[in-house]
Image 1 (cartoon, helix red, strand yellow):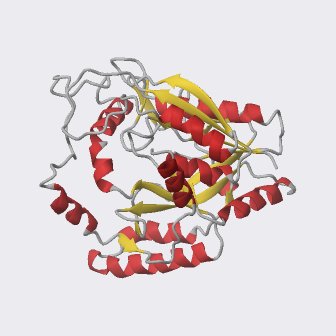
Image 2 (image 1 turned 90 degrees about the vertical axis):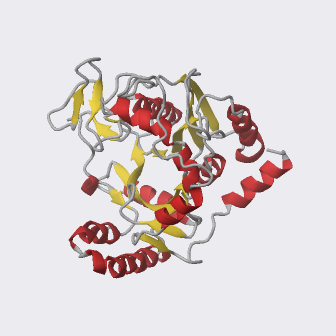
Length: 366
């Protein structure tokens, strides 16, 4: 088996990510995991009260190294990196840095697989062997597919709830050792690429709400890979049903989402490969990060030239979604009162990695 994982980290303790749980989960698949560990430059600017900042020293690098020694068995390959907040492609760059290191660990093995995951995506217990077996079976096929696609459970407001039509419900999570596949917006524009240039800075940017600058790209045309050429590790019928929901009248959508939920539960029970996306379990935490992503996405789409620049040119961050403690309960209740949020009840077991990490943190007073 030659599975090499890779991911990126940016102040994961300050951001309160489930990064240790994620690394433990994917270490069950990967022989090694390459991490592009970024530091964000300190900025002397005003921020909303209670907002989460990425530049505080959160001791995460030391925690990471200790966790690797004591729990993972020295599987981590850490590449330290200085994040450039004014570079629109930085998110994709950091992923490619980690990917190159992961491919180097394969030592030219053309049957090897590079496994990519975000720091808040935890593989469902029991899916490790399914993912490995599907990829190994494909190694023996006459027509070898370049990547494998897993399903994403978008947990929202609780570990037992999912929100449909929110985020990306499928992601490429394993790719072959192929140099033509890489991360991030291309250095030059392809005919089919949905990108442009900031006319003031000259930097390549993404069209707003269309591209996050960190997806997989093939340099044979600078386009996204064709999902139909990959290994589907789950039933795409779930996605087909979600795509059809827009044609359903509003008053009938509650029933439609209930039907999607049943199809989803059946697929999870059948052994398909699904991941838990934990980023929105704590909604208030995501809101406190809103000012950071406001600026990140604005630079990415060319709305502002530098990370701290705003339309009013004050140099201050705006608190778009950071309600006060007094307003928070009402805002959370309103957020959860959405027809597309469905409860999965006790069907989904809490991944075992949570208990392991909790015990380790308690033991080390972290």
